[in-house]
Length: 448
Image 1 (cartoon, rainbow, N blue to C red):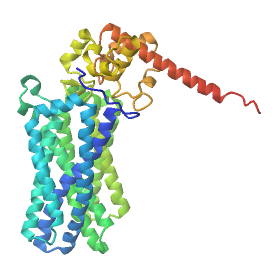
Image 2 (cartoon, one colour):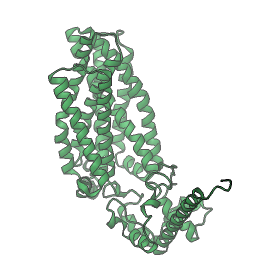
Image 3 (cartoon, rainbow, N blue to C red):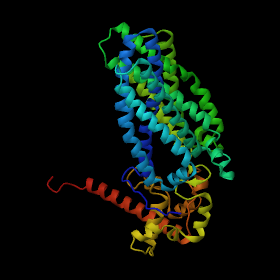
Image 4 (cartoon, rainbow, N blue to C red):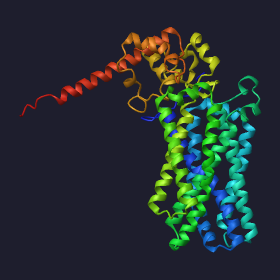
């Protein structure tokens, strides 16, 4: 039920706020993981061949890791926990209680990652080569293990698998999309590290063009695993729930378009990496390196949007709806009532929600406001602009059948009617306001 207050974010809404913060964090986190392997592999090769230019470059690159990966990553990481705890409290609670020891394990690796990363950066030329290289590999392995544990939990949200019946934590963690998720995120991490390396090679150092080209070609090799991106994506696609696949295949136009954007952008980066950088070892200037990184960001953002969007109408597929109700609770609320199931909202109204207007506003707040923000993101009023009141009532009762990405509307018949009346009043008030604006704009100027 709705045991917690509703976090209302003007213009954006709670869901969109989480999405924006999480997407930024994913970009930073993927760079941080890939950077670990780039530094460890690069220093291993640099020490072996006494490549002073490469070692100098890696020293500069490790500073970028601290500034981007650690500082900015820490800020966005805290912001994620803050936003999901407020906007999706029940989902956050379910994930923590289900995977409590998995989270603890991930946090241990994360702590090792942070300590090793700072130690690695601060001990260049201050400890033995062997010690410094060991710190680099500790960081790389710890960062990837952090990705490993997080991937299981993120994949669980799409495909809980047998956990829905057994409630066995390992069934939830080793779910159908776990391994393709680990593969896709590892490939993405390595590619981002390579692209950042190419960018940093263009931004820093007093190297000659030939030296810079060698550094760029070194970074380009971390794009080579992109050849595995399509097979892993196909594997993930096959393991998705049928309805989620349907959304990608045309059931939801936005999902289809973003999926195509992601595939096309990833393919473009991969083709350029192979033909331009790996095979022919082309020189890449600053502008081109920025463009390549931008295309990779578009690909990642698109795929993150698809991953989140195709989970609808669930937050945890088959278990928790996006409106905060579990699947069994949705039926219970129909008989019990939304007012009786939302104690925090009753308290916020002075202990009483007893008028149709208050009930309608409560229905909208707890079931609609996180995804449909008035005069903001995904505003509901334009979506019902051409519906009559009877059609509005008819559609809301069957919204989960008409639009498969919507959860079923919960509530008693009187509460549903109150929501219809509330939305109708919002709609008519908006139309009246717009008509007045049009009339005001066409009023003749009395001084003319």
